[in-house]
Image (tube, rainbow, N blue to C red; front, side, top):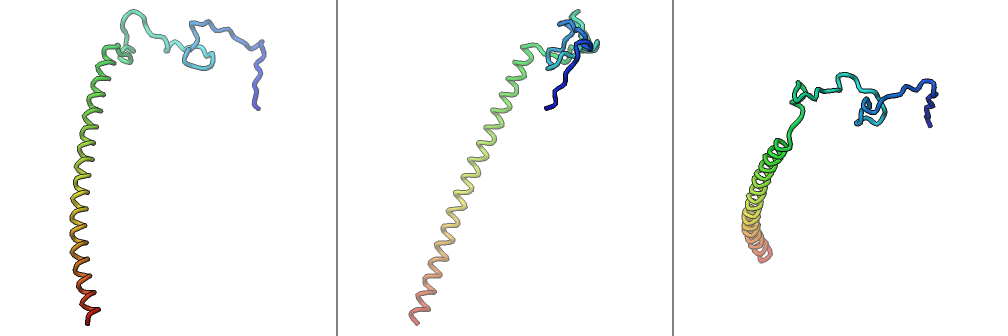
Length: 110
């Protein structure tokens, strides 16, 4: 095990408001981590309102629904093509089977 022991003489107190709550350690925030609470600032484009999130969620849901409809239609078309190909294959095998049977009967009766 690699245990680190920090002597209490090297301990530096950090105020709770200076702690980064998203970090598992108690690392002091840098001044660039703070943003202005004056209602604006250049960092505000990183955030969205609940209404914007809800609108984006609705748009994404519509896109997902549309894509699933398109995929379902393609699967249905593919199934129809496979069934059609199977019917053609059965006809071809039936014809070849009849021809092979008649040739075999002709060879055996000679």
